[in-house]
Length: 55
Image 1 (cartoon, rainbow, N blue to C red):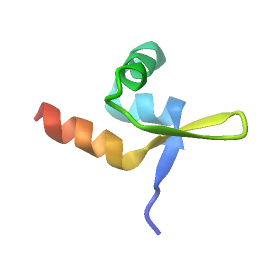
Image 2 (cartoon, rainbow, N blue to C red):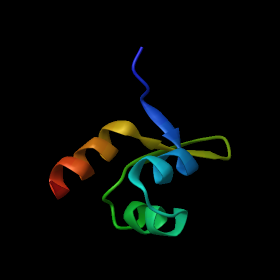
Image 3 (spheres, rainbow, N blue to C red):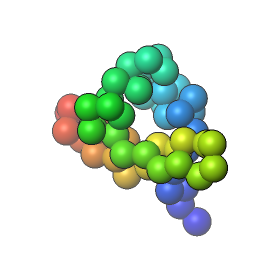
Image 4 (tube, rainbow, N blue to C red):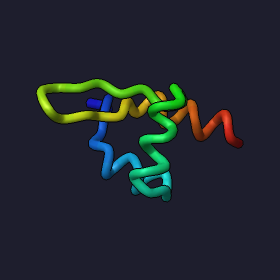
């Protein structure tokens, strides 16, 4: 099964950026997240779309 969402820490690591920059991308609508309880997860398809858009 494909991973649909990953924790913020892992998303920042996979993009090679810090958590502050990641939250800027989330706030700017460039990355989509979902919240389950107190935990925020970044949707992996939005990470792929961001990388493809930058390429």
